[in-house]
Image (cartoon, rainbow, N blue to C red; front, side, top):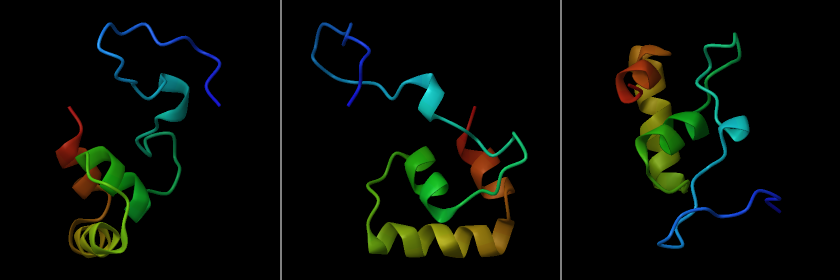
Length: 67
């Protein structure tokens, strides 16, 4: 799936920059975006948490998680 070689010595894989986005490009921030930015697994419980956060704070919920 990923044509880029793994360059880490521990065998851990990082998400390539081309797959990351913050919504700043004018796109819509989704609950899945918020879950992934928080470092959590995408599952129904975490998606529900993210939907509540987005309802309360809007896109600022994502801004709080990103540096």
